[in-house]
Length: 506
Ligand code: BES
Ligand code: ZN
Ligand code: ZN
Image (cartoon, rainbow, N blue to C red):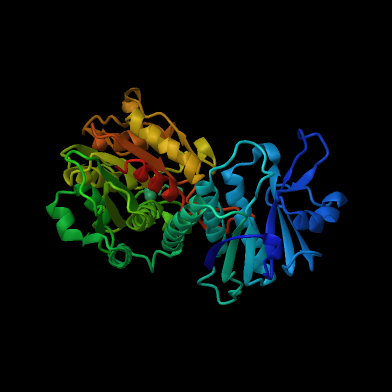
C-alpha cells in the first residue's frame, strides 16, 4: 500500500473514499449516544450532520457508516469511523480507527482512499503529533494485510494507495509518519514469517530469510547450524533440535550504529524462540490444535522484524539479535523425558517434558548473547499455554529480574500501543524448577503458575544481566478477527521491543 502524508483541507481532497473519525460524547454508558465527528471542517460537519442526527450511527469502536456522493465534499464516498466513548479517546483508538477504515474499504473494492487526521475537537489531553501520525500509519498498514496468500479463491481487494490528510503542516507529523511506515513494514514482515507453514518455513529457511533481510537492511548476519551449535556446547538447544530431519539454525544479526559510542555503552541482546514447528517431541501434544504450532517461532519473527526496523531507524545503541531456531519432533534420536543435558552456561537440566522446549533453546540463546557482550537482554517467546490462562489474549506476559530495565520496557508500551502485563519472577518461585537430580528441571513442579516456572527457568540463564522476558503465546495469533485486524499472525511485541531499544539510544 503506497502511503502518503499531505497537509490540507480533507473536504477538498479528491479520492474514491475519505474516512473520518467520530466519538461518542455521551457522559456515561447509560446516556443516549451523542456521536460527534472529530473534524473542524464545516464542510465535513455538514456532510455527516443528517447521519449523526439519525441516531443510526453510535460511533462505537469499530463501527462504520458509509455515505455516497456527500454534498460539499470532493470525495466520492465518506466513511465515518467510530472510535468509541470520547473519554476513551487515545492513540490506541486512532490506531484502531485507521485500521478499521482500511478494512472497511477492502471488501468494497476501494483501491484508493484517504483518512483525515482527527483535528481540533479531539477531547482530552492533546496527543503528540509524532505519535498520532505513527498510530495512523501503523494502524492502517497493519490492517491492510489479509493472510490469504495460500488461498486459490483469494480476492485481490488490496487498498493500493492511502493518503493521510492533516490540517496544518507539522514537522513532527512528518517524522512520525516516516517512523510509522518503518515499524509497520517490519511488523508485516514478521507477520508474514509467522503465517508460513512449517513445511515452508524450516529453521534453514528462517535463516535464509534473516540473511536476505539483513543484506537488504545493511545488517551483519551469521547463520550457523548443527556443527557450530554442538561446538559451542549449546547442548540444551541441540537436545531440542536433534530429533528433527531439519537442521537447526542459530541466527546472529548485529546492528552497529554509524556514530562512535562511548566505552561502556549498553549492548542490547534480543533473543527469540524460533521453533518452526512444535509437536511436543516425545511428550507429544494432542492432535487438537497442533497445526497452530507453526507459530511457535513468533518470538524469532518479532526479533527479525525488530532488527529490520532498527536498521532503518538508526538508534545510537548497539544491538545483537540471537535467534535459536529448530523443529521439535519425536524420533529415534530425539531427546527424552529423564535425559539430563548440560547447557552452554554449565548448568545441568533434567528434561521432564520435551514439550517445554522453548526454554531450552532460549537458555543457550540468552547465555550466548551474554558471551557476545550483551549488557541488557530481552527475549520474546511463545513459551507457555499457561499465559493464556493467566492473561487471556489481550496482554502478553512481561517478566524481569531488574526494575529499571523492566520500567523502560513498560514505558514503551504507551508509545507502541501494545499491552503487556507484568507477572512475578522473584526468587521465592525458584522452588518451581528445583530438581532432585540436576541443577534445575525444564517444567514446574506442577501446572500452577506455569508461565512463572518458564520465566524462572530463563532467569537462571540471564543471571545478573538485566533481562526482560515476554511470553507472547497468548497474543501471537489473532484468533478472533477484529474490525482493525485480520485473523492470523499479529506481529505482537515487535513495536514494544523497538521502543525499548530506542530508549537506550545515546
Ligand atoms: N509452544 C508451546 C507453548 C504454546 C502454547 C504456544 C499455546 C502457543 C500456544 C510450548 O513449547 C509448550 O508446549 N509449553 C508447555 C510447557 C509445559 C510442558 C511445561 C505448555 O505450555 O503446556
Ligand atoms: Zn512445546
Ligand atoms: Zn513451543
